Image (cartoon, rainbow, N blue to C red):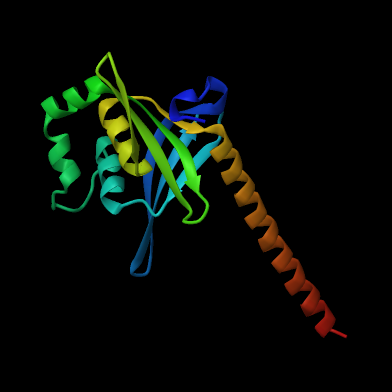
Length: 173
């Protein structure tokens, strides 16, 4: 299927998006949470720290870091944002490479006569869409697959717990 052939039934619109930074000891992990119009969630893990900071700043959150990043310079240029917003039409998170466990997105740009689709890192495409107030979509199949993987992980954890419980019970006799 070509990138332009997605039907409305194949896409779910993102109604909110935010970045999360979790810290443990000296390590942190990052995540983008996409709240979907159907009430579900879609997660992007191990997102570049700079994108998470930028999303937090765009939401008005205070960040305790006085260093500027490339995205901060972009945000400070309203004429660039306006021009980009004029041409960016939408972002679609459309693919998961099963070999690398990496998602991809398409950013659709148009000048009115021609549409150009750029394959992008999803977090960067999401940042551009949030910055320019453009719609973000996720392929329904990807949301379904992510939910299925999460359910399988949960079942695996429960099975391991059940096995551990059985071993403890066997030790009693």
